[in-house]
Length: 158
Image 1 (cartoon, rainbow, N blue to C red):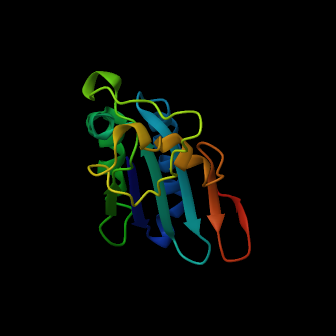
Image 2 (cartoon, rainbow, N blue to C red; image 1 turned 45 degrees about the vertical axis):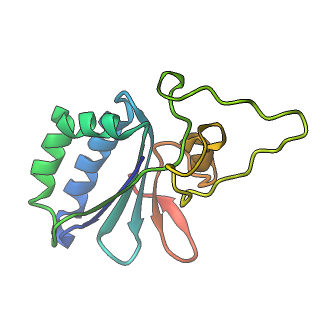
């Protein structure tokens, strides 16, 4: 599961928000079910975009109930110009063996198709679903890396 959070921060609160975000990312990254967290800050704006990759929806919901997550939510309300925008997307992935029916393995000459993140999970046979970890590798961003982006350059912001 991918969670994208967009936060527009008040100019005078950017440094304090950045410190709180750094603590949040460190805590969330160490939580069970967290696969990857990436933060970007738009160079000429005080907007931060956080991408969180979670093992499944249950892991993410558990994370939302954790003390560090609740504390960050309470505190970031004071820093934001506008309400936070959060979107989620489930990615196709292998389902645990105990929840799916056995499927025949492809023969030596049979190739599995690559599935894009937009491929519906419900219509994809379990044996050909793509692991979210493989999709994450396509982003080529170091785990827990925070960058400031523009059209021409990237640099660390935390």
